[in-house]
Image 1 (cartoon, protein in one colour):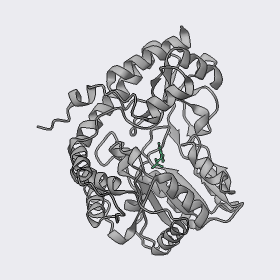
Image 2: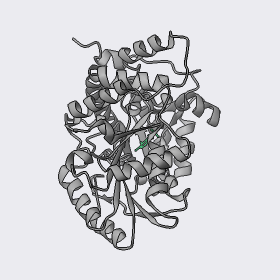
Image 3: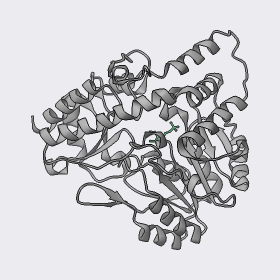
Image 4: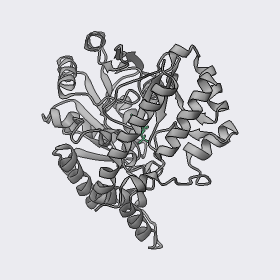
Length: 391
Ligand SMILES: Cc1ncc(COP(=O)(O)O)c(C=O)c1O
């Protein structure tokens, strides 16, 4: 019997004073003790197997230059095969400090100044910044919002963008903030459009381990096996196992020409894979983390139900998007008539912090909730949200 039951995840963990962005950073910035339901990291103890590996490595008192280990790569590829049916070879991966570095490197390497990169709003804010701050143009093909708050891709808009000369697309799979793991049919239809126009696809799959059903997400590389495909994906143990402070991610592609270009440009600016501890934790997570992850998923599913139930009860005019993946819920509060500034002010006054919708390029009136925390904390946040909106 695994120790990673709901009791494990129910246990609150005090992170104050660890310099974490989520609690300490927020308190410093807002000068208030807010309950943090914002940035995408989890308020759970990490798997004992990872802690033990880190403590063991830390107990050797020399921390000199260290290579990306074959053992970490082997563990990572084994995990991808086991959990996602994705078969990859060691030469098809490239270690990076974080997913954002991969997104930015792809923009710089695979497009020219002024060229267009397709994104699908609302989407993770740094997608826009990675394009704009590198002097390229965002071509937004907004997701289509349905009556129940669900979202679909607008493939006509994507095709139009391709016709207008877009060179690259950032896909979020599963999608942050709308919580959708795209289906095989949707992904294939998207790929067919991009492929017809020779547009390169960067699939950000950092949330791929948070599908509510086993094998509930399709990694693009599992769908498109051709070695010549202009396709790369980005993921990490850091999101799945809550190791973001260690800074380690990976880029996968079967296309060796693309890989070489990206490796060369990362090399030019001296960006290499992470450090001893990142490597140790990555290997332990991918090799021994399954039991922790298998305990986490049902807990997150319950967390999603809790948010939905509480929102229905406390704020019946709100719309909570249907979701099948991630621990990030998308709340439409437009019916209550507040703009983003007012929503932020009211939630902060009520003692809770969410991420405002405009961070994702959305219109005002939306909040994203991160419910990867003990259910007691989520419940507390929902009480505070009600107070913020209707007093
Ligand atoms: C879709 C998406 N991509 C990338 C990141 C950031 O990843 P990293 O910290 O590895 O740069 C996040 C973090 O929340 C995310 O949601």
